[in-house]
Image (cartoon, rainbow, N blue to C red):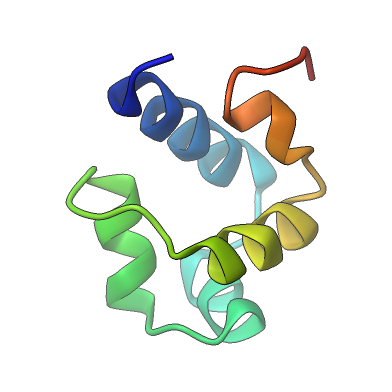
Length: 70
């Protein structure tokens, strides 16, 4: 799976969570601007941040990475 598809899945999970970006940012220890950059495909989170993000969003990392279904 290409990075663009992984970023698309990440964006969909963030948007579909119903959790404000500001709240997500506070829970994973980054700035709201950083979460905004994830949404714009400017950057991809570091692995530890990605793991925390999956927990906050209650989604399996395997899904975002295209390894398994939701």
